[in-house]
Structures are given as structure tokens and as C-alpha cells.
Length: 150
Ligand SMILES: [Zn+2]
Image (cartoon, rainbow, N blue to C red):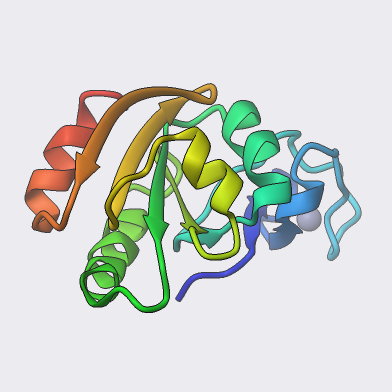
């Protein structure tokens, strides 16, 4: 399931702390033991829904390659792709960040990337596009495209 937060694993007690997308740049403390959490924790076991306001912050600060799913609620192929991306995010947690951007609520960002058709997947490193996949591909094909950047 897509959430709007990342997970930071506490280096001291191992607890997983939820970090809202808007606070991912700040260094927090563990909710269980109060130890400092590592800065820039972009660990996510599921695709993270990121809105227009947080998109640049998240994609530019992420130390991990980021796969952005440009989707829309009315798009049936997008729903098929969502389950594929959920599996990919789970398999590559800690190596790849998968985020989802709703093009209906984030039209400015979609236009900036010149999104003509959805679903479109864009692979970013430090906020810069390195690859793009248009349409639905099976999981192994998407994984093969992504693995070149891990
Ligand atoms: Zn802790």
C-alpha cells in the first residue's frame, strides 16, 4: 500500500520510525529510545505518495535512485502497474526509492517532465532524469531497467 512517509531504522534499538515526507530532510530522534536517527532516511518498503510541494525536496535529497510513477486515478493500466511497483519497492527497499505522483493533483510537475501519456515511469538520480519507461512493463523488465542505476 502506498503511504506518505518513509521509514528510518534506529541504529541503536532497531525500531522503525515513520518519517513524514515533509520532514525527511530533518534529523529526528527515535520514538522508542530517543537515539538520533540517521539524516536523510529514505527507506521505504512500499511506494510513497509524494505531492507537488514535496516532490523536489524528496527527489533531490534522496541518496537512492528514485523511480517516479506518474499516474492518475482514472487510469486502469496505472492500477495494474501499482501492484508491480509495490513488489519492486519491497524487493529493492533500501536500494531504490519508489514514489508515486498523481498527475491530477500535481499537473505542474507532470508538465515539467513533459508527461504525455500515463503511466510513465521516470528514473531520477539526485533529481536528474536518467531513464524513462512509458506504459506498463512486467516486473522483470522494469527491474532490469532500474538495476543499471543501483
Ligand atoms: Zn531507537
